[in-house]
Amino acid sequence: MPTPRPQPVKATTVPGSGATFTVQAVPLPPGFQHAFALALNNKGDVLFVAHPGAQARADDNDVLHLWTGGTPRALPLPSGFKTGELASSVGRTCLADDGRFVLNTFSEQLPLFSSGGRLTPLPFPDPNIFIQNCAPDLTAVANDLNTDESYLWSPATGTIQTLQVAGAHDVNRARQVVADNALQRPEGLYSVDRKVWQPQFINEAGLILGEDVAGDGATLYVWPANAAQPAQVQRPAGTDAVFAQDLNEKGQALVGYLDDQFIYTHATRTYRPIRVEGWRIQGTYALNDQGWVLAQAVQNGQRAVRTVILKPK
Image (cartoon, rainbow, N blue to C red; front, side, top):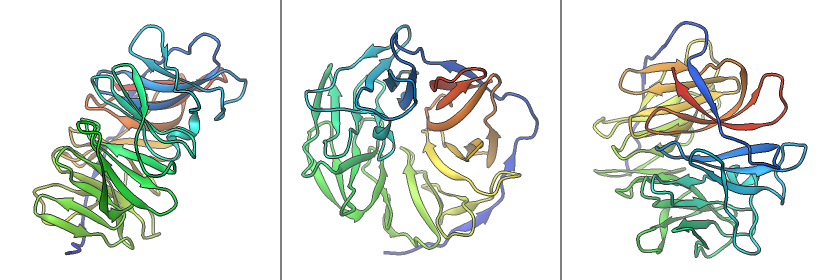
């Protein structure tokens, strides 16, 4: 397998100050005090877990909710299953535009698939296998946390395929996979020099987004389907590091580190800072095709952790 070397490219950061995004808070369900974001689709629907206690933490009492506008709807899990903040820390929850979703649960429990209002466990061979990411049709890659073995799950057939790559991170509908040690492009399979970079995301156009793992300061790497080699993208102005968090079908990436969060647009090689007023952002998690960002935030003067959607002004 060839191992292409990234080439450096320059990028600009949009100047200015003040809010660049507005905040739409997802309502807290009655009786709950905190919410934890899991997934956002292109319609603006949000999947989250709500916690009834006084502290924002993962807990057995967390309840899964779907918000499509109005009052969030609780989604009871099958008997013996539980979810919480941990569900978003070991993999990824995926919410399709038609309302289907896949959800990671706690350790020693299989991921769940929701279709037609029914939640069913995915038939992976081990409960320590977690969904890492999905294509828009919910085709998903998953990893075994103990062995790093990777799997491909098809929602159309319900079948599971063992992949020949280790540590898979993402997949598109063409079943091109990016992983720790390799990535797929239309022309074939490429190995990845993990001393240089690691691919994290791939969209339907075959655009690959990754990040630095060389230890000399994180930067972004992008590899368009029509390019001969990946590009190492200059970091945003004034930052020491930046990490890939999500990639949409428009070629925009959600990236950031600590308090510095940006939308990177590949077509213009431009970073747009994410700034809001009246809220303190605690983390950003997903980016949909409208450029909306799923985030956690605390409103000024409040203590409750809220799930919010950030929308470009």
